[in-house]
Image 1 (tube, helix red, strand yellow):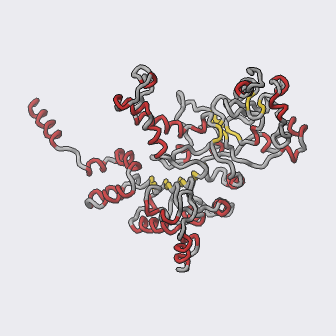
Image 2: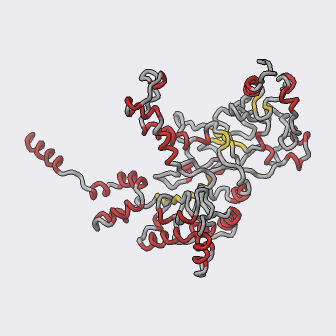
Image 3: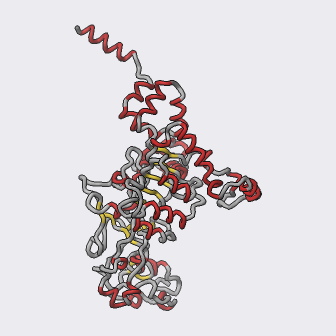
Length: 459
């Protein structure tokens, strides 16, 4: 009996698993498929009919589709210079193409439309649930087709840092998609990555090739010096994978860290569109919920200082991440922090990068920095609500409860040179926590000491 068992075990070891065995396991295929580029998947389907049937029958194979790496999806590089402006001769080339009777939208959306047509002919297009088009040439009309055309069944779309996008037209497309008279079940799109930055592999690669990593991989290549000695580099010798994991962890949780400005200002016109999309389409940003954006929640001190019209602010995107500590005085915030699993979905942003293994908005909003299943609070606001409440240097801030009389930035007069050069006792009043973007307790004093010069206190 023992010999028979050993023979069976040896036979099983002699038969290695094939690709068909590997892909037949739906769990393995679901975990592996998002990491394969489209060209690799198509190459696998062309190997044999068995693998082709397995890949096409499994819905996980083409659930996640990243087209940002496909060269044919981009406009020819010869048309643009290093800063993205038309290169010499590009306008003439474009004029000849436009003479063919195509519109500007058809011209710029042509490369992606061609890819979509090929994917549809191969029976792949309607299987995609997460579509990444970061950095490509994407028009508002093309986004409208992705949202409304029955050929598509996209649940999460990423169009960060795309080119030739008309923001006003995109707002109209989104407003129309969520109109009250829309058909039942529309739009299918549930999440839109629009405001953040696209994945920067080159930046990660440069950071992964830091001196500490080079010393860890090849100590002989390190230049001489105390800081590059073996003892000084203990704890700094991370492997490349460890550095990449750390960077991606910070990227995913950047909304929950004191990152400061997290979204480049200038797209506040989307705030009204985000209000219309509440509960329907989630974004990789949230609206500021500061009290001055809500006419029913304006603090009494703001109404006393200004008229109601001056105190009330238009809707704005929260573009400053304040970290998990909250207000320096009370540890919270006037409107209350947003918490995953407890707050409404439109109070939470989609986190970077888009999820690989799930097309659920709830999964895309889930932070990976929970401790014992307790998720951190989200403290975010717009710049206007943080005027003279937020230190640009150390990240501390005070809300309306702890600092009710902070002056509004639009009402402040310019600071004279005499005030800047005066001692800290004349600049900082007892109820002023932040002056000129620096906290008066520490950062302002340090800046004044460093910049005192020969005529200052250290002269």
